[in-house]
Length: 398
Image (tube, rainbow, N blue to C red; front, side, top):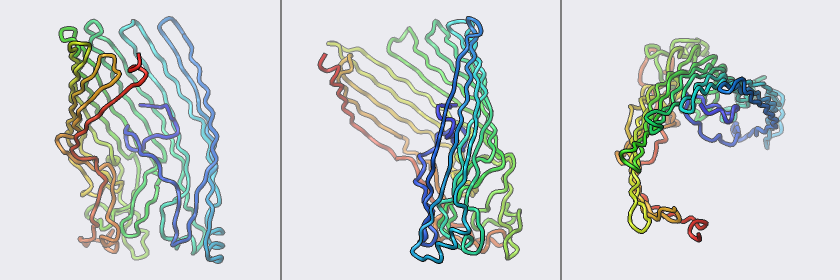
């Protein structure tokens, strides 16, 4: 797991998270803006315990203050929102880490690491309905997220260093994991804190360059990942019936259920299996030119792209294939390449939600079916063909 930024952990297994949107909360044309001040400091040291044993330890301290500014063209409404909503929240955290590395030989490295991470809280900025804040005191903030865990792994070189293998097993426990959800009827996005969740699994990758075939490199990777809620009552999706699991937290004024027990269920966007296999082959030609060909296949397993795990949001596993061929001088001063991406033309949404203004929320938490909204998702790009020409002036002039 990449801990280069300990304050920005992906909330769905070990996948990378998308860039965050600017934070603005619109309340029936009465916007609130969220701003922040942040201070971070990192201390780290490495100790050589023996000739083959190394200890690296450090800690990151984070202090952050988030403030929301309320503005309205209606003075009375601005006064109500200012009085009923929190003005600011302060967050601070100390995240230590340590890694013990053993190198018994130049061809083998074994390591164990303890890691912690942190992501500050903030204010709900995607809500559309200002009603609760106009009726009385209302807290529209969410808490910080923390993660604690570690991994054990090894890196080794075999077959006279022609085969490189990396393997790691890991387990991380999240507290107050931040998950966003989109409600179709009100077209609003909110962030909820999950009481507890666990991410664990094993990864293996290799790089093989056989001496018998010069210029050939074969790479591959496989990962098994389990990401699940330890204890979480999540919102029901619109139209979810009692038989479909919307049978917890009877807090609706009409006596309907509004929560589902997601304990033990898989986190969104966290496939259990992922793998890849590919090759590149470089063939020297006369006059110091180089022809390179390659291809790769990647498999991503089944997952749901909605936090509420609506059945229609589950996507089957897909395999995508890329290929390329390139030609140019061996010194790399210029290169022309022909690329094909997603040649199998497979589509797999990475995010999505219910279509706004579809479905019937009055049927949520009842025994009557027929209230589910339509769903949409943002997918990867389809089949693509590219021609790429690269020039490196520093090498071209040599």
